[in-house]
Length: 235
Ligand code: A2P
Image (cartoon, rainbow, N blue to C red; front, side, top):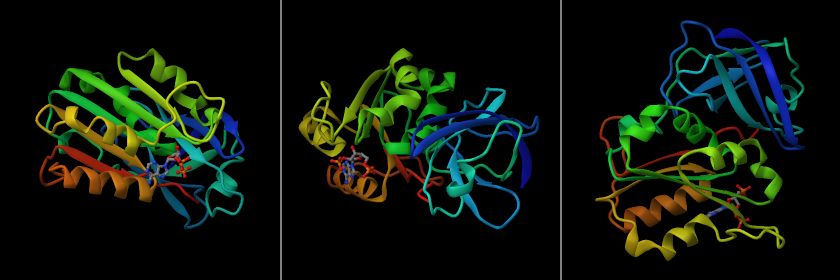
């Protein structure tokens, strides 16, 4: 583990915040990877996807806050100038190395599962590797989009913010699984590649759906037509 200073913090709701830290000059990672994060004074650490890009001078993380969560009950109170500890071995399956490249890239996220995709969208290589990029981000309520909504609107991508539990929401309100099923004829492994990150039930539903449709899951050993990883920090 290595200690880094917190440089920026932004709270969005009583369950969501993001923070930036200094980036040690020797710290390297690939867009889409995660590292372990802890307060540095006990053994409680959790995996966090980096949301910063591989060329950014800072590290950024997007986190939930859980009142009785072993890590986030304390992490939510960090202030600028405090230090947190980070692991030195970034890893994970949501990297372009595990995916066949070319065609359309689909990034499907629920909740804080958007985190690794923010990093990928901050890496110019992602835009070079595909003809087009589509992002579908599903949350229960609009305020849960706040951290990255403007960033996603500003990118050269097709972005479908999805809000499933607010009757006043004017945009897409269907679950991602339903949106994908609606377009099944048009989404094909020969031309489309899919990355998935969200809650366990969401990941399992998409994984089953794609596998039944003949898609191949990519791993660190063999690239495939889709990759998935659950969003980590739940406590
Ligand atoms: P819904 O409101 O219909 O449950 P959560 O906070 O429970 O992880 O949910 C975040 C977002 O993911 C919500 O929009 C939720 O929709 C959606 N979601 C949760 N589980 C699934 C699933 N198994 N398949 C598709 N979408 C899901």
